[in-house]
Image (cartoon, rainbow over all chains, first blue to last red; front, side, top):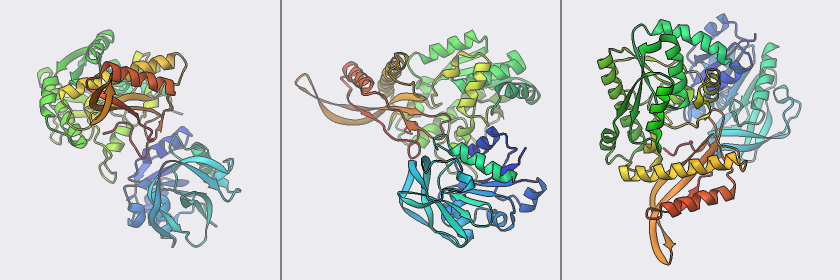
Length: 191
Length: 315
């Protein structure tokens, strides 16, 4: 059984991420973002999900020890919403308040169609959103994978490492390919 | 996937270990508290006392139905009618968070009183994941204080047991089906009841209005679903918006309140899509409410907000 933990940044859907992983037979736990990297290593985890966060922390908050995870991890990391925004800032990108925030149902378009995380996902699909801020400048060494009408960076990936950032929420029931994206992520973690 | 049989197998011995003396369960008659009560009842039998509080904000005939349910399930139960107390405590209160906190605290004070009389030391609640998630605390923002979490007073003297804490509604329903509980498919109803379906002060008069409107919405939607006109929504009800608009009733000017119809589709209440109720059904509901409640209500609107950005209930 693959072991993937969820780092809790205080999002409303942290527990949903845990549930999706558990439903997919992953050994999973929700741990606070103050957990030390060496303690995660001791648990022999194979992947991490950085959850969304309390209001606006993606914009300028420190998100506990998330920086340490991004610095040291050699396993896949999936940053969601505030976790994605923090990933972008950590690697030199920019996060700003959205000109038009997105809440609820949005159509997302894949602009890179050969990415492993989105394998089997249609070019246009329905995703659910809940954000006031967004990544406006892509960090160095990242590629853009998906966009929506009002948010140009819906998904991004580090070119070398398996670090992904998603602005939308794959963990909620109403995101069309949500569980499918988690399955792909689990495969990446299994290596 | 979630395995209800395994969950039951694992939970019962844990409850037997956790509850040494007597326990009391806050019993609303909904899916969560009924599943919870049935599990604890299996674990400790008659040492569990189910307490139902009629807050005055229950739906039409609901207190009687819940009483019957507790009889049918052969629970050791108490039925407390506190409606007058609740109406008094909520007099002049308009703020949704204040309503929730007052209702939550009142529940606990009533439970503590029963606990003292019955020498109970443990309070069992059917809290499920969205309740504590939305109530906030620590890093998480408070979206709304669920009466069973955010409404709990700090000086509560009872030990708390919440065996369904990590479950979502769809999983609780699975457990209910394994336990053969009739309530397994019942639509959710919030602990603060109709008080949070009245925007503004929840007076007894306004409560009667929204109670009647909720009853019409529920009956018509259930009828339409049975006839195959629509899929039965996850949750469906009426909200009273005490804003008056002008109408005309038989050549005479009318000036009455507004009722909003709310219906959503969901699996776990964490995200919801508003239901697409056929126009003919909306039409029937609209006519029925305005005709039977014509002195008070002359306008019906339909809520087309998803969650997010909205929540299911308006408060």
